[in-house]
Length: 119
Length: 109
Image 1: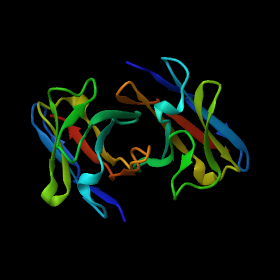
Image 2: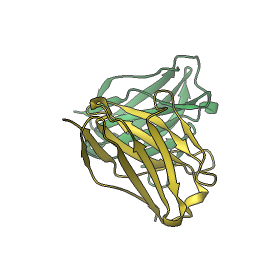
Image 3: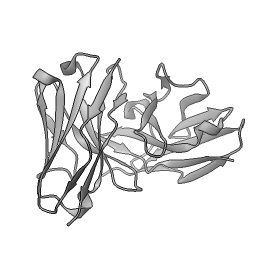
Image 4: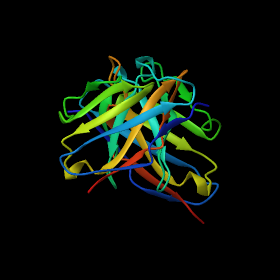
């Protein structure tokens, strides 16, 4: 069965960097695109962008350029989200979400990774 | 940037029927927006319910259905169960970007 398992919670100081992983299993990793979604505490969902798992080409949503980087390691079926120069407002749960093909998107979700930025 | 609007909150009685809607600031929602619906319970990841307007996943309970209604995407719950109390989000594909609605908090009371 399809599973997306994300790395554990992180506590970081402002200005630091964090790298969140999303390990996929149960399917051929490069067959489906991977999205990243942010949810700030008590807030709604926000699409951050997606990465083409065949080519590694990332696309970033407005507001997620510059400090945010999507990457892959296809040898271990894992997608990564790296955030640099962390700010308090980056405190959120970050989700990876896999597309499904045939007009189905964001079918499968990781469990989420809480990133807390605090001095 | 497109704004996607949902009802902030709705209340329904157990066994009742409720319709949640999803509107785009750019105009009428069509299937070309690939309307997608998710359910999220506290402390959990979102779960996909409906894709491309009205298609259900294998895990989607039969009481959930999707449609287009009056220029909006709609999610209808028929025969609501207590476990349907949750936040519901719609998602639209708008000119190359995906945009989530603000969510509807559904209370079953």
